[in-house]
Image (cartoon, rainbow, N blue to C red; front, side, top):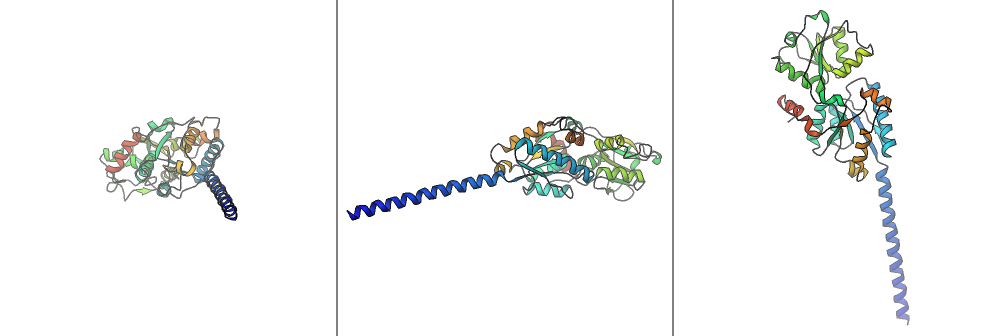
Amino acid sequence: MKKWVSIIILAVLVFSLAACSGQNDKKTGKEKKEAKTQEVFKIGAIPDQNAADLSKGMTAVAKYLSEKTGMKVEFVPSVDYAALVTAFQRGEIHMAWFGGLTSVQARALVPDADSFAQRPRDSQFHSVFITQPSSGINKLEDLKGKSFTFGSESSTSGHLMPRYYLMQAGIDANKDFDGKPNFSGSHDTTYKLVESGAFKAGALNEAVWQTAVKDHKVDPNKVKVFYTTPSFYDYNWTLNSNVNDVFGKGADKKVKDAVLSITTQQKEITDFFQTDKFVETKNSNYAKIEKVAKALKMIQ
């Protein structure tokens, strides 16, 4: 009899320990789930213009995405284009507003990343070449022997495509200017340098130029556009391949749907991006950018 009592007591103890273990496992799973939902979804943008304006616009995007997705979203500034690409490669940035070139560079490092949205104008984007009216520069060929500034070295509309169309006009940017070309770092700095006379000419993003003229940040009596490039695909939102791993299955779709739902009701966002909405795009749309970047040895 004592033997059976001992066996029963032992069985009860084993069952109790197993139940406690199961509860602990469930608790651990719950804690893991809560930890995952507490992750911060970090967005970035190439620093191609005034830092204060960029921060204001991107913070508005972060706030809207938080409201639409239920995730905590935060804008993380980058010191330069390369730093943003590196942060994206490391998985520290989950979605980025890239130019065409930086999106190609980022996807070369993160092959499953997805360039999924752009403004309507980004499928027909242009760069403009500017100079002072009295410079005597009226076409690309006139730039030989003149000082010249690009924007950032990693900029699509401030460097890559302008350099490409200079090549098409028979101008080697490394040899044919008055000294080596300058890299201003941002589009707004480019037009300021040309307006001041620091450089005879420069190239920049058409949209930034148009806004600067509209907002009276540049004097069109002192600076003129003398050449506009053919169109090319440029800016886009690119989603990192790690989003579902970090935030759970379906997180990528929630973010995409949120971006594509932006309208003029989100005025702070649409005003900043100079658009009324975002539309779908795809990685293959940037094949020309990739081809030009490889030809110019800006990517492998």
